[in-house]
Length: 458
Ligand code: PLP
Image 1 (cartoon, rainbow, N blue to C red):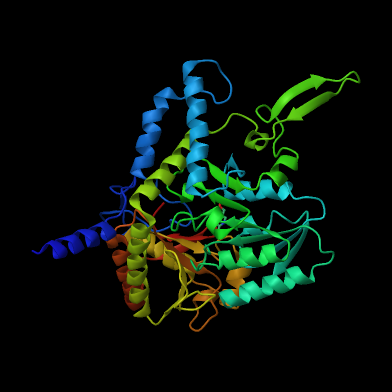
Image 2 (image 1 turned 90 degrees about the vertical axis):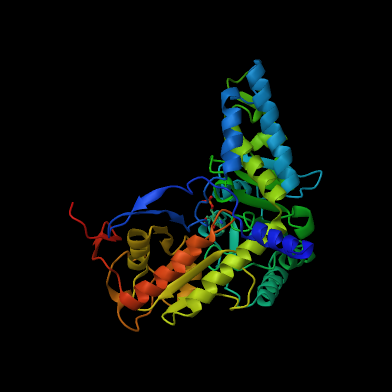
């Protein structure tokens, strides 16, 4: 073998090797008998922990101590670890010198925190296509919901028009996703940020689905804030992140009132209390910080950076091609898309299957093939409504209206994967779809508590 062939083979191998994650050897029972290795294909909901994250957490666990309180050695060590995690994640996100990084519980928590920090009179602009976590936190403020665009260019135009027309022309915030949790399609974040800034608005990036798949740089994308969740970034220990401009955060009332957020508290002569709040990120981190969660997120950031996003993206694109090529051979399957077949995307695909309710299809994938996917409306009801052209309802039924021949589907199935997914999982998925559509389910299913489940004796 020549040196160049050997190098190409090694590069190919590195593209094809998944990162080690927990759960790879877990087997699950099949309703048809026997056991099979579980294929976790619901990364968009929660990704398995990276082995590296687990090892880092385990190595630290004996040294666990309180953060920002406590004079003991382990408290000091834990405080250092927490603050180092903040620096590592800020570096991972390409934060500016003056940015603040707040550890939260999740993306939902991060966006709700930002919603509480809006300056007076701030109007918020959100596409109807967002996940509910990005759609709903602003309802107490003035919010404009923008119609679903059909191309990335249309998204930019729609936003520009809405920002230009706003009355009065006061402070404004745009909230946009980096990658859709329904279609996996990438949004034109840099262009939307430029449009927002050109019209005197700020922008927060919901990177819940983007950060696990692509590098996210606050500086390069020129966004004002970014939010993501540890549990989607292979670090399921209860931490999320909000990072970005300090001014709104510093001016806002603390998200939670309590210890850690307050620098000084004193009784007043009239019997009340005066509080001096911190101006650092601690202002919005009241209560005992989740040091293990923050450490886990930092560990995942290091692991992904070391693996190299070029390599991770190449591998994921290879898996996406396998799934898309496989599903393309099954005419009964329709993939949901806003921007069209050629739109760049991450490893998240939703689809409908003619003649099947999604709950039934997902139940059969699980019970007969050991494959875990998600079905339903994916906390993005307006987007799914637009994509299906129907009034979506999670039916959870095995038969019913959506399964009738030619019926409009009521909800969808989502398959999603990432850095820890072996080829075999997506290959099994494609084979399972083909067999279920061709041969039907091998088992009977019934509706129970609004979900479709195998009909087994109690
Ligand atoms: N934004 C997007 C695009 C998501 O996919 C999700 C979760 O699925 C969220 C926000 C909310 O994330 P979390 O549930 O971790 O708060």
